[in-house]
Image 1: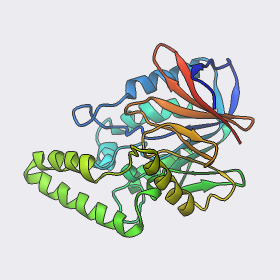
Image 2 (image 1 turned 90 degrees about the vertical axis):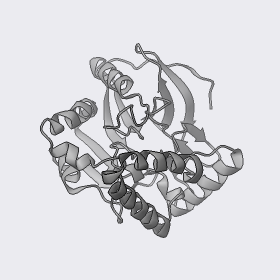
Image 3 (image 1 turned 45 degrees about the horizontal axis):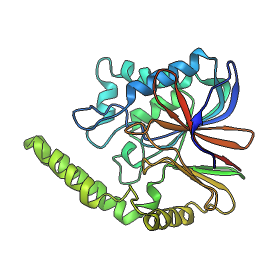
Image 4 (image 1 turned 180 degrees about the vertical axis):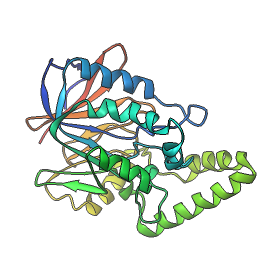
Length: 271
């Protein structure tokens, strides 16, 4: 681990991998604040500097699909254009031979079986993305991280409740917002406030991911961090922190975009 310092991308450099999560794209600021404009600025900055990645991992909750149907927004007039605003920028950082992986997060899915909506899945596959819940090789395991919070039964009940709220909200639109706020304050345990909660959450996640001696990379909690002892990296989010992770020669750097092309290194882990 190192102290936070400014980081400079070298022009026309190919890095091994990019990891980014919890964008919650399509979310309106009326529902929840976000940093999507800053994300676009970062992606444009990397493109202008000629930065490329051999592997791009979108580590879940990239598209918001809980507050509304993202699939309906995709098929609307100009809907594909809005999706392209994000994915054109991401794909511009890939080489023709790059591996691109879309890991399904809890907010990506409105399905009891944790699947993407069919038309969104088709859109991503047309762009060359591999879609999975977990991606792994002999060195790393990558998954969104909700697996450390939701078992299969809890996930089923969560989606059932969410669908009921959507039905009620057609008649009483304010009910959904009120219940979602209650859920986030009292029932949503994806943010870990104490060291004990952090350890408990990552212990469960590591077991369910069958981590072994590999490095585990996730998102979900919106809290960027790296723990060498646990061999865990969290990419953070683009709701509050504006963080992402890059990999080069076995060195994983957690970076924070602070605007006007200012990027700071939050952590560094060698694996």
